[in-house]
Amino acid sequence: MNKFTLKIATLSLFLGLAGCSSSPKDVEKVPDKSAQALYEDARSALNNGLYLKAIPILSAIDSRYPFGAISHQVQLDLLYAYYKSGDAAQGIALADRFLRLNPNHKDVDYVYYIRGLINLSQQENLFQEVAGIDRSDRDPQHARAAFNDFKTILIQYPNSKYATDAHQRMLAIKSRLADYELAAARFFMKRKAYAAAANRGRYVVENFSPSPQVELALEIMIDAYGELGLTELQTNARQVMVLNFPNNKKVKGL
Picture (cartoon, rainbow, N blue to C red):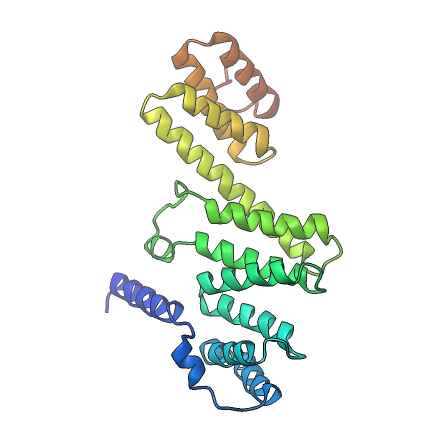
């Protein structure tokens, strides 16, 4: 098996697993036990990483005992199982429902955190990553949603045990969003839509400083303003470049 075939096989396996989720038929097959007995079965499956096995059991408990003493914990465990199994649609739906019905629950920060992770996972395109294809020009709508989830934790629950990791993930997402804006700016430059390219570059400078992308954004702004004959704006962009990136090729010799 060559390397590419192996990558495709790995991708197919992942998609096959990620596409599995509990259906009403799966839930019906769960034995008729007490909520506690079923929960013990579910926890055993979760502890052993058997998320696809745990999902129908937890779903059965949630369906049969919606107002039980462990109903909230069941939903939180089910949310985690959806995340780990790659079932983003079910995970997002459950998180949204939990937040809507339990806005003051003590574990709301956890729900935002897991929803953020699910949103982030949706942004990933496994096939492109496996094949080594740059995906910086892909609309980062899920990355923005994840950023907002993690931002909610930092603002509303600054003492949460998930706050530190949420902050680190926000930094990574911020870099990704900047890459997207740069990809859009480069696209507009190729299409000779210089005003749109300059605006994208300016957006990066204004919203993603400091970051490595700022220098590249300034380069685009300098070129775009030059093409548009906007000398004053081009000079301003060069001055910002001189102050922040004096060794850049666009300012050497000035």
